[in-house]
Image (cartoon, rainbow, N blue to C red; front, top):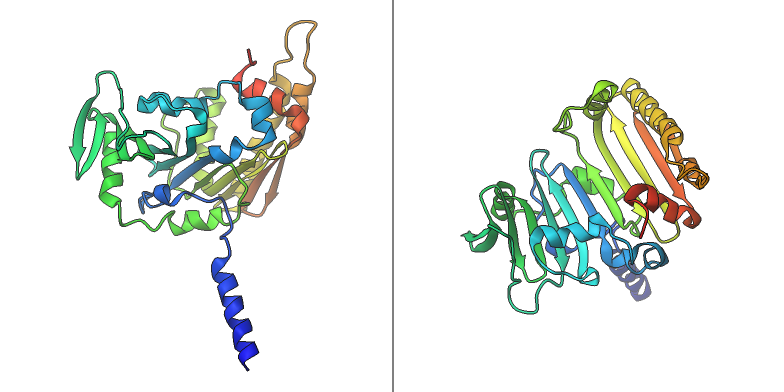
Length: 304
């Protein structure tokens, strides 16, 4: 009987210690996610910088996703000192939170031209009534619309992490995902007008009830983007639009200078596969490591 009890206790403890599925969000950031969040996007920069892909293709290249945040918050931050980024949006306003080593002293020295320092409920902000930097701690800083930052502070202590609908989508991703996003619906159109036939994009966006995306850069670029629509008919419209975009990409991809064509650029689209299953549309991403530099050239421009 004692042996049975010990086995039961051991199994229970093993279950308690099991790492939850999906990419991890640092608790210092997760605790700031408001309950009305409909979109989250994260980047595990510390994990990315450990990969051969980063060391070979990204370490010496300008990458806006990594390099823009220090500029936005007005701090000199080494890449290795920026560990994680988290975008939070309620569909109207957005905030980007950064986790890293921002100061050796108690508070980082933010330098934003024309910005003033002001307080709100015990927290310091630097900026103006339109846009500001929020100093949460020496290792957590937020940037975005001032009203959204105040809302973040108002909800601090009320958060249980991502809302349940977004948390469920995160659980469907591998823990190794370095870039990811989850969307819970609520955006009916892009906040700007699109020309010609591209205006149909707003119709597609309004049909997506939820969506997710992740990328894993440990070996090549691998990932999955998923959109769930309200009906099979809407999913078919999304499938057709995405399939057409991939086809258009094959035709319009730059081929390099005359006499220096780069046929491997066309191969990038071989690694994109669009599928539909009932209400759900998927884009499967499988790009081998040999095409990573070409993919980065297409996305970021040729490296110097």
